[in-house]
Length: 236
Image 1 (cartoon, one colour):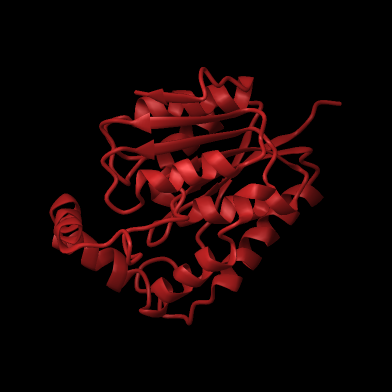
Image 2 (cartoon, helix red, strand yellow; image 1 turned 135 degrees about the horizontal axis):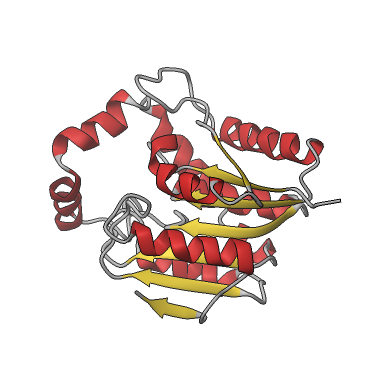
């Protein structure tokens, strides 16, 4: 009997399913993979419900369990930013998860005291635009969201040490939201024998919608379908 394989896409903080439409469409074309993505509780346009990071974990676990119960023998998770932290939590708990892709996993972030300064904050505003930042953090999420995100990272900071499946990490060198050191932290701490870290030299935090998304999509497809990691660390 043919093995069923699923890909679960987990978007980032203040993100949405549209963030990953490009990679979802590319992977969905492959008949060997079924692609699923969803919106985390409290996310979305003018979301006002009270957020709790435990709800994010619970909702994602429910999706993973649903896939397992549906007969998927191999599950691959792809997580962006905060979604990368949640993807690591899932991979550490469920043996059915066979591969992990992380894009700018937010185990470290600009709001941390050691990473924050006014110059970086102003650069982020210039990079995204004031209206876009306002939309993401005031229209799409209630004020409690950022505090819950911080608690999520604190709770699961050591999770990478419990991951031993093949993992591919993508990090924009122009990312002002999640520093490069965050991806390097994950790379250095996972127990995976097969692991790769790709530095994206023309990309900021918007990994899946930036100018290198075509290259990124190819790298992810090669990794998920053929397990291809060209080198431990690579700049593109």
